[in-house]
Length: 309
Image 1 (tube, rainbow, N blue to C red):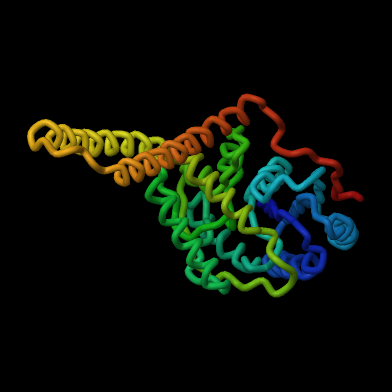
Image 2: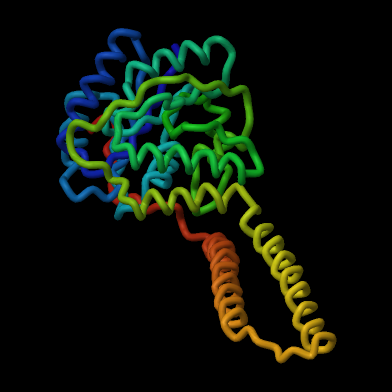
């Protein structure tokens, strides 16, 4: 019988975990899944891991993993993937915004011959500013990326074990899983669904964390920022040559005293700012190289709850 592993990153979700387990267990019974549920507590502050241990007493297919601190959603998921033994591996968030009943629909697509089935959010029940931000980000990422990353997708998916094995070969510290999932290839298809609103608790994704993930996506899968620096340099050189030619012409041929202090000040300010932005982009790539060279572990595990506990 095919074994299904479901990876769930958990952060400050003590209140919603019982509801999540009820929804998953209902699907398990309905479709007779041979299930392994891997719950990764990513440094929660609300005793989520204690709730995981309690639930493990009622559901004997739960494996709980407690990280020593908050390492971030992407690294928590990657850690969970290391502990999966299933033939099929699903990734789903802990907030019930991605409905667990869709996992069976994903599996049916897998049975049609696909290696990866990922969720495509055709509609999101969230604040319009957040929806607009996501909409803009995915389109910018798609334009800048050196590979095709499907629009409006998240980590919600079902993958065959060989796909996960190849994803785990990536040792980079700035993890952007949906980009890596697209990079490894295999036969993939999207499945459209309507993403629910979060009814219990608050999202662990602050604006800073969302911005960080956006940077990881862009800098991990695109050289375009560096190419923009080169393009900006040549554009600035071209404009400087035109402006210098005009000054020389006015000074020598028209015998008009050269004016333009304001213009020169504006140009110096503009190009100084541009230089700082370029240095920042280069520094971002260098800092990522530095992270890779140090070869620190992706995460640190402080406790594991096995099936038998």
